[in-house]
Image 1 (spheres, rainbow, N blue to C red):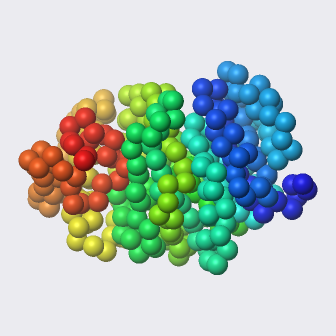
Image 2 (image 1 turned 120 degrees about the horizontal axis):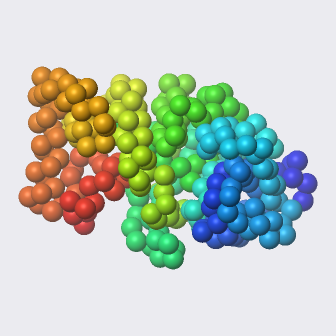
Image 3 (image 1 turned 120 degrees about the vertical axis):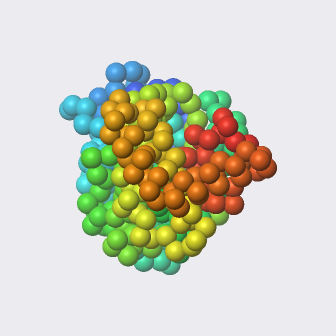
Length: 316
């Protein structure tokens, strides 16, 4: 196969990914759609990642090793510039793509223009057992309406034209965790369309080594979430999601008290938000609806925030 003629570039950034890397690679190589290059960029891993990658004898794999550690956003941007495919399919080192993922996505995007496509996802444990599911909004209007509440895509399911991602300037290096959510907000500002295929085509791994799991990661994620709330509020159309926006905004300001060492500044922000009763009222709605009914709220709950609540609220 001539990789210069590959229609898809599967882009995987890697950093110390030895635990789940082999399974992630195998899931791409077993795709029913085979006309792709598999661009893997290692960001100076200190574990056995490179040896695992080199153990595969498949000409579709193209390994690039960074000369120094540059971080995930910059590594993905490097991948966008090196990619030969017309389309980019993303996957992370710890996730899996089920074997008809690429075929399903290329079939959908072929009839569309300037569109970013995702899919629904299963959540999987360290042994790849299915432990849950993530259902995202499907059509463009619904995705825009929920854009202020968290990323409306599972990042490892993203499929888009390379030229559109480059037009957006790629991933912002200012964001360490929520760089994908920021990119979708930029895409909305350029009138790029969105859709999610309502099929479970990827497995999103849940494990203790994820960037958002430790205190530093939680603090970073919360800070980035508050910034992106402000940037994306204008896309909300429904009263349901506007109420959810106020509730979640208040919630994340409270979380800042626990995570931010500068308590005075954080408390000042909380007190200021109390001057806007709709934030507090809708936050209390979120809390009491879950507590009293043990059912998921009828307000849209982004997957990334649902994880935070999982220890307190039932999600039957």
